[in-house]
Amino acid sequence: WSVVDRFYFISTTLTTVGYGDVAPETEGGRLTVILMIVSGASLVFSVVAKYASFVHRFFEEASPSSSGGQKNNNHNRYFFFFSRPLWVLFVLFFVAVKASMRLGLVDALYFTVVSLSTVGLGDIAFTSESGRLVAALFSSVFVVVA
Image (cartoon, rainbow, N blue to C red; front, top):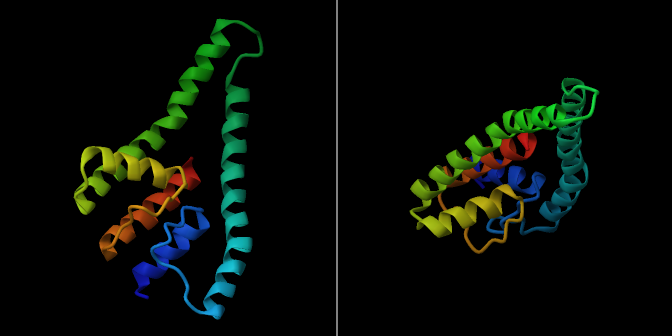
C-alpha cells in the first residue's frame, strides 16, 4: 500500500467509515486491524466525547440561569455558532467529492452523507490516491469536529 492508502485505511477505520475498498489480506494484517479498532477507535471517540463535553459546558455557562425565551435564543445562537464549521466541512467535502469523482449531484450528495455520517456503505468509493487523501482528511476532521 502507498502512504496515502495507509492513511486512508487508518482514518476510515478509526472513524468507523470503513468503505471496504481497502482491507488487509493477511492474518497479521487482520490482527493489526483488530488491535487498531479496539485501541484506536476508543481513542477517537474519547476525543469526540471531550469535545462534546466542552460544547455542553459552554452552552450551560453561556445561558442565563433564569427560564424563559432568552435561554432558548442563546442556545439556538450558540448551536448555530458551533454547527457552522460542520456545514462548511460538509460543503467542502461535497465539492471535493463531486469534482474528484465526477459524480452527479445526487450521487455526490449521497456519498458525502454516507461518508460523513460514518455509515460507509461501500457502494461508491474513492479509487484514486488523491481522492483517498481527501476522504482520509475530511472524515478524520469531520468526526473530531462533529
